[in-house]
Length: 193
Image (cartoon, rainbow, N blue to C red; front, side, top):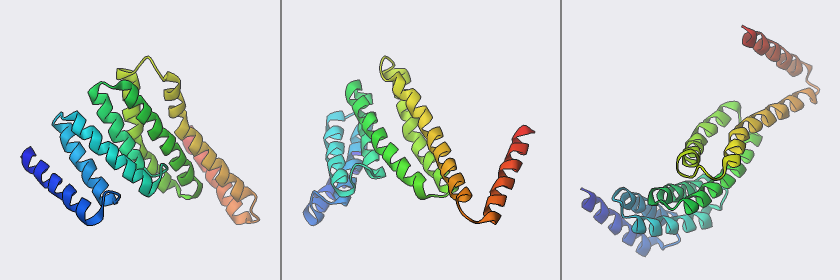
């Protein structure tokens, strides 16, 4: 079954190369999928070259501040972790979180609370993967980074709440200000009980 999947993916890679070129996102997706197959088959060298190729294309297409680029960094970190190349894994985890931090800051500037929560849940996979890496495989390094990472989401949420409060209180809309004050009072009452 794996041989059949490999055959299909190699054919797709060849077709996408000849029809779309090696700089196309679809070609990168095929490389990433083939890399995932090879990783599962423990053929790490093949997987490594393919996911590195996909990462370069994704970086050119989307830039380093996009979730697709972050996904490539996560895939490389996971692969290097499986290979026992912990320094390389660490480097890609750090790159992943530099990229994600920029994404989070952008998202939190203009999204609703529900959208922020959705994004944080999506982002949690990466965070959990990195924290697992630092506590089990690479525990002698970057403990300070783990602490900083844990505070990042709290700081973003607090900053977002402060920005919202400032917008409300610096507006001339007394109805909105009263609603916000009532909401804060109700929230405090609920937290007391």
